Length: 86
Image 1 (cartoon, rainbow, N blue to C red):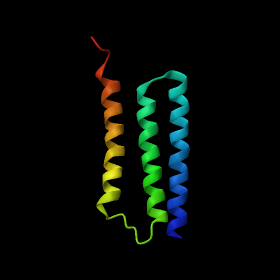
Image 2: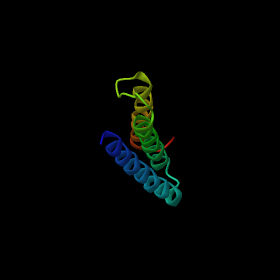
Image 3: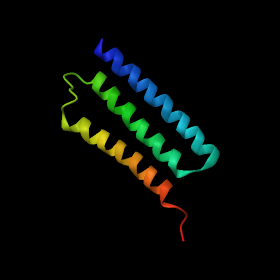
């Protein structure tokens, strides 16, 4: 049952990534591109947890992928709030 839930979460994250990618294509705003990349990384992370045998969330490999994804979200928010370039 855990693999089914992880697959569902991965599918939802991939769907959100595609929505942000669509918004990026319409606006060319880097904010949406970074969010799409972060959610795509989260989808890959959850898919890896579901498909790899003996995978656990406590392994550092999965934490590093999440850290990069959350870092992308923070960078996107920081760049958006930074204001226009001078």
